[in-house]
Length: 191
Image (cartoon, rainbow, N blue to C red):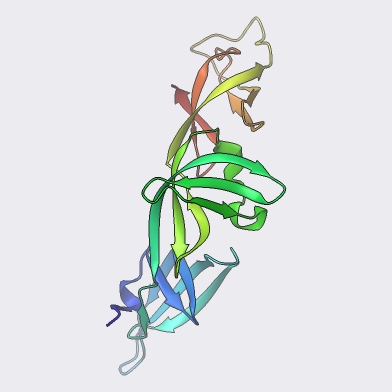
């Protein structure tokens, strides 16, 4: 029997099934009525894991949802070609392929051999879950101005080995490895 989750217990990053599709909660807001007998309502901002569509919907606090048949499979990134992006399942050693729509902007953070998690829904790959941080090499960095110092303010543009361009502090040079936050795509420190 599937586990049931009440709407009032759905918080950020919880995965649930709604209208036969898996969703992840991005934000939740609980509204309690001031009048007696009023319904407690839960407003969920949620993303469909199959289509990546994001929307908000209001539910009664006691509405119930099932847990989706969703599993996270450890995988490594192999390559991308005309058929999509290919990953190696680290447990079964089968190749999993995701099309551009399902991969989203994840390729900005992936180099060959990178380890991550692949979402499988009902046995089919539907997306990836990146690590919180990735370490990437700087292949180009704008020259820093003379007035810039390692203690100082300002940022400059740097291009990483995946082609992603980010703002970095002035002291970062070509050839260095930097840590990037995958959620925001921002510089997080030297690696």
